[in-house]
Length: 364
Ligand code: TTP
Ligand code: MG
Image (cartoon, rainbow, N blue to C red; front, side, top):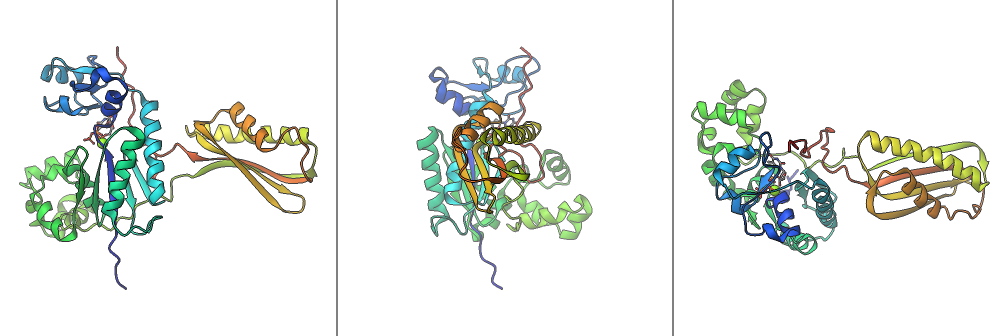
């Protein structure tokens, strides 16, 4: 069977947190800016491009950053703002494909081999996405387009900020040979150090090793390195394990027509749903009421809110609206269910690992 060449886009916002702060607080614009706190035990979350010129970067202790750039401004992080923008960009991705794999708040892989627009050009889709992101959020993103995730991820980094980079399969090898080993997506800091101690500084050095040798040196990941330096990466864009909805339902022993009794049953169901949401620290935007009547006819009604919620009262109020409370139901009800979808769990990967960065550094 012919292998179809995949079309993968990787989108990554430019200096994400810092760009949001510059957008919302004009006094920072054009000046060196770090997101984080200047305190002794704090680190920089990210720096804008003006600060990067001085060598300030993510994860750098704030004191070191201040030594490098004495006039550095610090903006305290506003995680909710970044999360809201993350949802805006995710909505844009879903206009093109459901094959979206978020890696963190500001980046995602998209498989657009087949897409909702039937657009054969992944490059044009990436351009459209960048434009829409700019129009919607006022922020720039960089995009990489390639036949696999590894190359797309590397491509998006090449022309930052506001970049658009296509790596065609026959360009990949030349490019990867010249790439410093620490820029390889999937080669962590520790491995990069080990590779350097072996004299592997660039892709070309890695290319000289056999798969057998790499497996001996790095275990199973050796095969991964062997393949990616040749531009080979078959990993799919993974979406399926991201939980899409949280819900609960109840089938009654006897059909119910009394509206008061239905509301009491709904309250119990909503409690179950909200405790589930709270336990997993997620909220949802779309609230759905499902009713199965005595004759097995099913009706579902949904409302999408402007905000994400896991609030009991808010959900109850919406459900009562959907139920047309206090009107009596049309006919006796056999089952009733409540669910929340459109969840804000986009930074949990397919293994349930939280990928968003934590902001516990508040030492001042
Ligand atoms: P990145 O995409 O790695 O960085 P960036 O968007 O700031 O800059 P670039 O233009 O190079 O893409 O990370 C996205 C956000 O995640 C970043 O704005 C802040 C946060 N972050 C941290 O909090 N700590 C870190 O160590 C890193 C790398 C990122
Ligand atoms: Mg980024």
